[in-house]
Image (tube, rainbow, N blue to C red; front, side, top):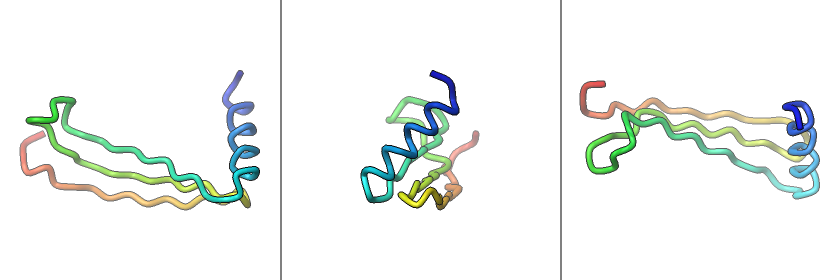
Length: 65
């Protein structure tokens, strides 16, 4: 399945769902939860009408990167 087919199937799924689907992305300084910190949060909301809304926020991790 190629990217276009995946996108078409996702759009059809969201339309059938009848409500928005939010995709969350979190960027960090690493993968060790005891030491590493979040640096960015992003959300893309896909709506049943085919539109999308985006939100993102940079976060100062309080440590050197």
